[in-house]
Length: 252
Image 1: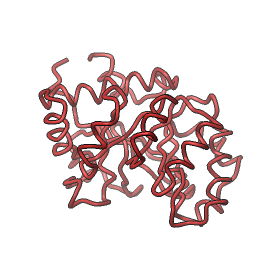
Image 2: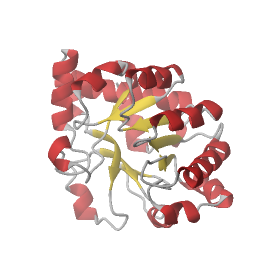
Image 3: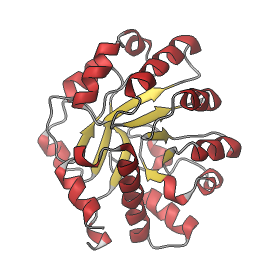
């Protein structure tokens, strides 16, 4: 298909699970991975049927109540209802030990399961990579990863993908292998620096990557989808993707 017809892709954004149909239409058909922060929020969102939004199961490391609510049975149930587990990970603002135990439980239960993982690592990049080294997963996506160049090389060698946004530096974006790049807005966070006006608004990011990679913006968008297709194949989730997203990937 013509890449000019591809909708924008946003692999990490936050949308209220009670979003209305008119509000979704205002997103102009963008394909969005909608992160939740707590199991309760994820369970509410799981009842929705939105063709362009993939609702995740989240246990945000910066929300102690989310970690306290985590159970193995809850994760196993989520694996049947969600194909994205996120936002999960580690955060410098909370006590490390409970976060590490929660992440280890999630990674253990998700091992070899056909899901994607959207992983937060603010201030804990090396700890997060240690956790993934212990329990690797084929669907790991490092969200807004601000690790060192060595960290990025280590993560890439482990098979990780990276969802990036326009708040990240040119230097760090250039360190990440092109075939591991995915777009995100992390909406509504840091709207001034991401220049994302809504979930799915990756226009400025595509302009940045077009300049950095010396290719047209349409080619950048095609790259996003091509990388997602490769990741989905690796993680074994292609048959689980929404029908519209399957059609977009199959026609590239």
